[in-house]
Amino acid sequence: MVDDTVPRGYLRTDLALYTGKMNGADINYFPFAITRADLERGQERFNIYCSPCHGRLGDGNGMIVQRGYHNPPSYYTDRVMKAPVGHFFDVITNGFGAMPSYASRVAPDDRWRIIAYIRTLQFSGNATINDVPAEDRAKLSSPETAAAATNMSPPNPPPQSTTGPNEMPSPFSGEIPAAAPMPAASGAPAGAVSRLYGQESGAVSGTVPVSSSSTVQGGNYR
View 1 (cartoon, rainbow, N blue to C red):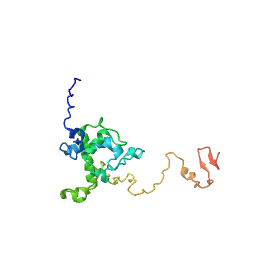
View 2 (view 1 turned 120 degrees about the vertical axis):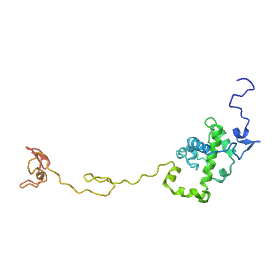
View 3 (view 1 turned 60 degrees about the vertical axis):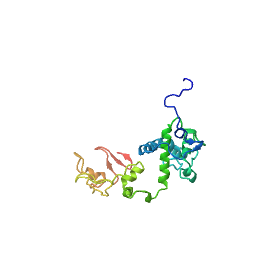
View 4 (view 1 turned 135 degrees about the horizontal axis):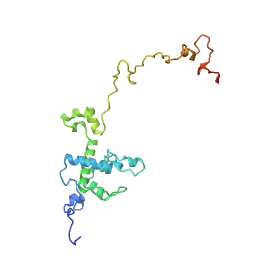
């Protein structure tokens, strides 16, 4: 690199954007306007990089924490709720406590988008029904809205029986088919089924025919 030059794309004269500070103090505003697309991008980056420790809800109970890692603070504590957005940017950039720096993995613009999503989590965690526009309140009770909020599919409807007259009923229908008589095997000698249960006239109790020339009685072949 030539002395006293800056690579293209690395001229960072906007201190607020690239450091989260002005005059050495954390700023409490976003250096660019946050759109819905920015929030969606921030949610995506948050779920990838932040939720393993902080949890999807930001309550500090992510899967890594559940397996023994240091528990981070909840975003809903009074201290974190009042922290300026520049503080979050500094923590993501430089790390804090047990949290390492994510500067090499998350670009500056994406850090601000993550912070905007964190602010959304904080607001939603303390919002009331009165904060929802009247025209949108009815949507909150629909199964589709509830499923979308949790990134889950709506529950499947209960199974319906669609059996025909000669089909077995659904195991969920509660219907038990009537027992059908067992037909005699094709070509079997008359009375073979009865002999299995010792019901033929003159049969010995406990004797079951095995073949035309042998029987089992008392556990022994004859």
